[in-house]
Length: 223
Image 1 (cartoon, rainbow, N blue to C red):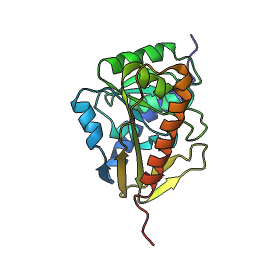
Image 2 (tube, rainbow, N blue to C red):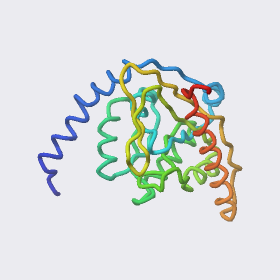
Image 3 (tube, rainbow, N blue to C red):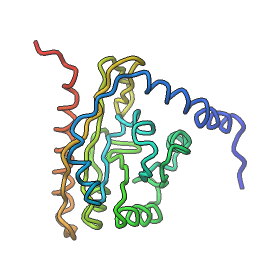
């Protein structure tokens, strides 16, 4: 078994312990408003399984916002994914390691099991390597197999910073106002024939893009 380099071990330790404290404090120093969660809460009250959809560029709030809900999260086994996993570990998530660019058989079985028992899974439909805002098929296939509802989620902030990364990763400054927004559930027909997968993938992508455009307007001042 290969030993992890000391430098990498140190970075992962910093992310898991002081990093988690720092992120938690950062988030608590902001003013949050939650919008559009009525339909999502109705689904959960009724025991419906849910796949939460979040673009890769919008995952900054995820470890903190969804903590302590026993939600399963699909996390890439890549180096970047390991950082996310260390941050989420201990915050009440069930971490499932896998992605579109890595073997998915075991991860798929785990996600199906979670959803078939009425649970929730967080999926990043354009991750881990993009293209940006390009919806992959996995969420559609999960929904048609398990009967889960797809629920878009995103955020924006009054004082924010968008990085020059492939996913336009969004962060924000402490003490700012944040809008955390749920979209209306997207229902995928059960037992969908493979020849219709692309049609539903494109429909889900367009819904996510339209939803995201609406979120982006939350702090735009009218002219």
